[in-house]
Length: 428
Image 1 (cartoon, one colour):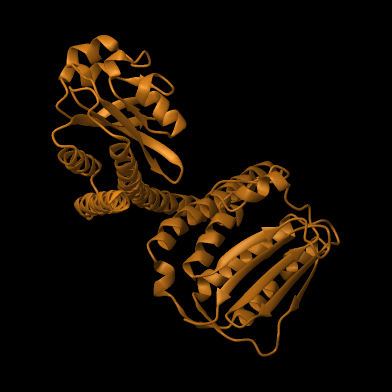
Image 2 (spheres, one colour):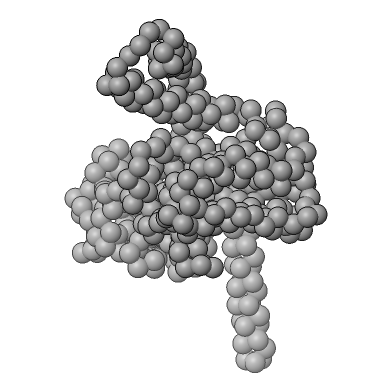
């Protein structure tokens, strides 16, 4: 009879344990279902706390989150706690019960918090009448985001099983909090991006109008200078001629700057896409090298090309791709050394065509390479004047074609100068 009684007790114990585990699974499923579909942080916290307190049969409590700026915990949502308690209970990491939980990531179960010396603000705890107390971490990817505090005004109210259940809920809630915070951050970032895009669009529009308004009078002045320099308005002295020629050069530089400034809003507005057609990159390269051959010859620079005879056509704007080649080859001439060399090479692969412009010039300092395609940036080893927009516009044009551009300096093949490479897709 005694053996039968022991067996029955064991069976009843196992049945009770199975029932408890089943209840816990149902509880976790209930909390998970309540949180599913929620993205607003306060909604998530309020729903989670309401479900937990309901499960704990009328307990009181709240959820504290970590303020990373002040490194303190504060009550984000609460139930059954006084306003004074919630407002004054700000806890530093490592301080008090909740501070220890967030620092260690381990839950704490107390039979009577009013008797525990670790409690912060014991006067508030006493005034609130808190006794039994549980504090569990809210974790996401091994990071503690806050704590869930559950209390009762009766001592010995909670069990270790309650704490283990809250532990599991805390992990669920921690993941939900992280997702909500990421969504909030994404929403904020999108607003910032939209604001920046709007400001950028306004600036480019203003830039285009201002540049256009400046170009007309400068062009008129340039025309008058050419008339005077050509002797059509009467004789001028050598001194006057020299001064007028210098004025003409400065105006030409200004007109180049204005043209570059006008290019930026045009490219941003999608002008390149409107000019897309099937083009021969080899013809563009050959024309560019022919146009600049006399300039290169003056400096004793040799320009050569390596272009496959059978080369796939690409889709692009003839005008803009000519501008890209002119910018790259002109730079290779301007920053080369006397009797230097420039090689333009084309390599075709399965999906794209790569164009390389190699030179034996002064190169680009390593510290300047990350910024070389930025607007108005000029390498620190360049003494000659320029707008600092050529490479920035070149990058914009290549990007608008669905390609990419990069630079290495010194050129790995030769150990000197620079190599600019851009790629263009062969499919439309």
